[in-house]
Amino acid sequence: MTRKTNYPIRNLVSALAVLLALTVTSAAWTQSAVSVEKGHNVGDGQVRYDAPYDPKDVSGITFVAPTTSHPFYEIVIPMGDWSEGKAANFKKVVVNDVDCESYYVFVDGFAHVQSAWLTKESANAPNVVLVVRKLWHNDETVRIDVTLSATDAEGTGVTVDKSYTAKAPKQGGGPEGWQRYQSVVLEEKAGLAREKEPVEFSITARAEHCGDLAQELRVFVVDPIDQALAPLPFQTFNQGTFGGTPPGTDNDNYLQHPSQFIEVVTFAHVPANQKQLLLICYDNLEAKALPAPRTDLKVTGESLKALVENDYFAAKLDDKSGQIASFTLKGRESDPVPLLTNSQSGALHWNPDSFGDNGKWGHTFSWDPPEKTVVTTRGPLMFRITNSGRMPGSTPQIWASVTYSFYAFTPYVKVSTIMEVRDVFNASAIRNGEVVLDTHLVDHFVWQEKSGDIKTIRTMHGPNWQDEWATRVDADIPWLALTNEAANYGIGAVNINATTFNPKSGGATLHRPAYYLYYHHFWGTPLTYFTRGWVYPFSDYQRGPIITVKPGSTYLEKMALTPFFLKKGKKRYQAIANVSTALTQPLAQRWGR
Image (cartoon, rainbow, N blue to C red; front, top):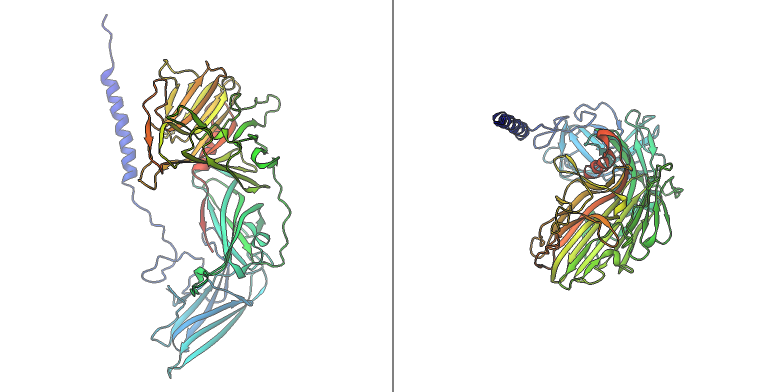
């Protein structure tokens, strides 16, 4: 009997699918650019000025409250027509006895850029508007004192002082007692509502603009309707100072001015595709230290071997190496998830690691202890610890570093690792990104391709003795997890960034980079795991010949480890997918003042 085929139909369907894909892609390629300029024309050579006032038409002193589209406190002062002389320049602006370094000038609606000049050859300037970027307070009387220099009709240099007074509005002002601020707009662009998302940033201020920056600093979120301020919990760390111009120099430029600086972590609530405005305020010598904020983060024991908990999980750091030894997934007390770890090394987070020509491994889980441990900060909202040193064991040619960042209210821990080859290394393996579990804990590997497709394979041995891995996937896929489909839990690695470089010769040595997914049921301690091989002749039982790795070759990863519950239906892996979206498309930061 002859079997009929539908090859022509299949070919037609395939051709139409390809044509549709090319059409969609081509549409993106040929899309016209959309101008983002909007606002007022303030002169040739400048983009439009997107402000809530027209600098050519200011009838009285105007107080501007910050918004997501214009994140500045401003006082707009119409100074009228200038006729006091040519070569006029603004020398000083003082608001309620506080010097203000941030101001700019419009003349009949045109912006004067690059400096605070008002006139050049002419002795006159029409419709002068001064805009002062200065925090103001509700219902306060504001006095603005302005000093200018000019040349009169006889060619004599003169100083001109002007003063203006106005009453600020009853709402929209900054917090009482604080004189200075910096603003940042957080924008959500991925379509994922952010609830208590960790946000980190740094602040620097002139030394004379604050006493103790850590004690004075406050973080507020601005209500988009009435501009009311609500305090946000935050934590500061890495406080420091810059002493100013180095000894033996005489550069008085403001860039070399003495300063204080500090880093901050806070938590943002931003609806999908929306923006939120934060204010960071300081310069209040009367400010008292704040009590510790409410938190679910708990760090118990010595930092190297701490137990770190929040409402989502408990993570135990290994007593000797500081590597993550285990996770306890919280939230299902009636049917608890077993301890996620392995019984061989006791380190769920297994590497970075390396295997050399001496036939021996070096693993960071073997540090006892690491050469150096740095605790950047330890609660109440974030715990960050870095362990580093030569690779322990038998591959000392490699220097390694492992950093963990734990946050309150957050279902993941950020992980950053570095491997730097400092001496010539004959390699069978250089790997990172490895999670290892006892085999009985999981039954599937699940991952998301860069196309967005989610794929899975059972945790079983490869199809033959040589190809021992179950499969291989790209080294930079969005996420990869070990799951127990029967018990509805998993643990995964979310890739934020994975890259290699060599500052000495351009490119790091690479050999067959990929994620390798293994199931070793026949080992004395059966293990299931995935690992990213960067240099990997060792990848299967038919070990490839050794490759020499150039000194300077550096392998960097930024990822997050997250234990999670599986849901039903099409949202089965939504928990890790949301973590991936949040970390690969974090809230965009756009700084104002």
